[in-house]
Image 1 (cartoon, rainbow, N blue to C red):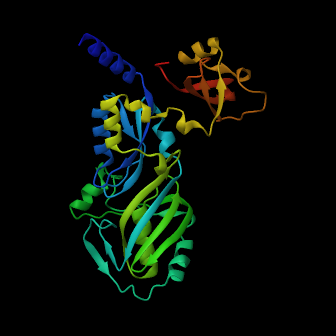
Image 2 (tube, helix red, strand yellow; image 1 turned 90 degrees about the vertical axis):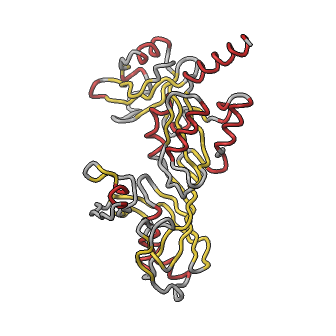
Image 3 (tube, one colour; image 1 turned 120 degrees about the vertical axis):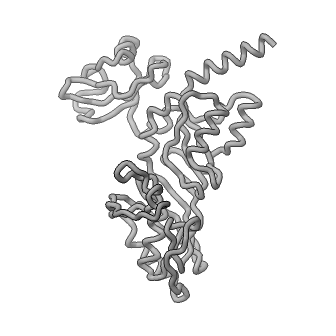
Length: 317
């Protein structure tokens, strides 16, 4: 019994120092907060967060940040995302999806796949998108969905979004299936609603699967049940991805022992400590590792202060 207790204590201590990601395939009808709460109980980690909200009706990739990885949640949020969208022509709803009340109807029978493809071209590239009322955005200190549930609609400023690719993959009118690759802040529900308005048929979303979010893809995603089984039978961390998963776009540098201690204490490094003269420009970032090849920090190049400033430091190292 004593040995089991000691092993459990040691596991809890090591979990407390852990930093990494779980690539979760979110189940339908779960909110992103539901997933965080459940995984916090399973992993017993003190800090757990998600890297980008998914609607309850949606499934697919939901990156979960654990421990020190929560400090890098912004690097998950800003990654490119891909979705498979199911939509239905003929009616719009107040939520822009199948969970809402019908607000308008129109005949869809004359719509052709060529017409849909032509309309989709207008939603590629950079453009302004109006977010739905049923969203978690704030308006005067209140969530938009809180106002919407009271029957209150307010003007929402359009926000810049980017769609890298948008294609029609299935046409069984009135049901359509789209694949979209987009940037941060994009609303699939708004896209579906706007497509319906352009076609003159109205439309709403009936299904959504996030297939990719930055470095995380659905082929490698695990279920909450799998994490729970791993926790009960051994160590759930075997399913986790390393803390630098989302930092691979940055160049890296291995610090000397002296530099490591300087960065640990928040001290900047000299311009010539990393790289060659002229190799970096102001604002460049690198991922810095200890001599033992453990991620230590993100450093930002600021020649105006004559050095590399520690932007984020992993204190547990």
